[in-house]
Image (cartoon, rainbow, N blue to C red; front, side):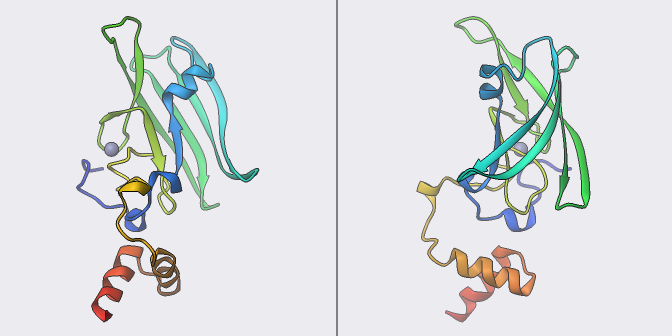
Length: 167
Ligand SMILES: [Zn+2]
């Protein structure tokens, strides 16, 4: 896989972090799903309005060097994904240490990884081409673009480009 910016993951182009499933390493440590030096296994689940929107399995290997978390799940009910996200440890001035995800696509150290709708993988915000809602320009036509993309089979950004030429 190339570095950040070298590839655009098809229709993940215009999503925001709020549209994504995310994994927060600080949260996993705080909730003791991960503990330094230990191996653990579990399931991460996401819900919206009490309905499950996604779930993945993880195998944390923090006793290994380098430490990593294996993620495994079925993508679009057909593809079995199973890959490692390596962890980086830093030692801040105030003592102790912190874990970071090393983005599986670009290697950047990040606290959160995201899986945008349409992207099967958990990557950093940059690799998923995400923005925050507050930073978005006008997106009043997004539903329309998504609908056209769905009807035509085009990626959303291509549908958008095609429509811009009409206006
Ligand atoms: Zn990345």
